[in-house]
Length: 263
Length: 252
Image (cartoon, rainbow over all chains, first blue to last red; front, side):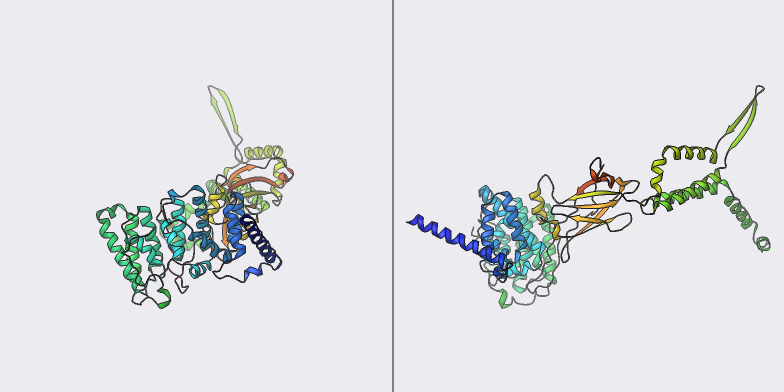
């Protein structure tokens, strides 16, 4: 009985997908083209699941479709990013690692290629998307680090920078030199328009980092240069005397940087 | 008018004037002038119509010949044995060489007067054959037909015909006398204006002769290389969509 129910559910799901594809084909894609909001897009969600289940060739073809239709696929890809485990990449199984790299790379490429994708990402993002990316940007897999750091540098702003600063502020778990450089690079990308609270948080985090690194900072020229650059940018920020506007306060207003990082 | 003027100027100026007159009437001047024409021929070879090149070359050779003279002759007596030496130099010797060359390479020389109708085909590939997936991930491009691609010949700056396919582009380069020295420069843009052109944008090419095949009469040489690609860069904005500093990130 349970099996039959499952099968019928599967059939319903499949026929809905077929209908969606047919509707999209007959209406020139307009059945879904009208929805560029953050809600679930069945056609794109199905394409993502086909990519995830498929072999390398299928993955190439489906990611091509997803990239071409970024206005509709980006929220679905972001939902996949939410599923990335906030643990060291070396502990993931191979399939998960490959999929996470593929998804993050696809989002990185969309953000780089299509300027309007950045506002869409920001419109749809929340802590559930940003937090796994921060862990990945400081993680122990180079491909994941590069893709995640690139994505974050393009989308992190006054509403989400606190998640990055939290990792820089906390000593545990210890940051690798690569991870620290990446998180500082992400911070630099938004430092030029930091508001009052963000500026204060950035300056405090950098002072703490400089104190903790002490003499070792001489062996980390990239991190040292980034810190100087970030402070110069926050000092020049036109927003540095302005309190965080109400619409940007959701996560970073009164953020508790001294709370331990939860994996 | 020249004489009173020269009398008025100092003897030093007179010396210079005489030296100049002497130089412009000397053999060396005509040899250098001829060589100048020949250098001009070499520089213009790739970009100028062959018949004009031919005229310039003939003019250059003629002037050199005028400078060298045509022949030399001499005689001497060594131990009462008269020796007469005739040196066929300058125009005489060169005319003989050219005459022999014309007879020997007559078929090829005919081509000098032809407007070039032959081409080299340059193929530039999108993917690194060793790892296409890496190329795709790095540049985010999987179909060149979506890009605006242009190619120009570096020596002339003239645009070249190209055909963009999914994973490579083919460029037709008019054949010059040294097709292997042809350099093409590429620009790649993701519409409307996102540059994907890497630096340097004139890729190195591996040339070979196009041997066999129906098209070998038209396409005499083929070359292969890799597209000069650079990853696209996001135009970063703040929360109000105002542009912010664009960094060259060095993530690790």
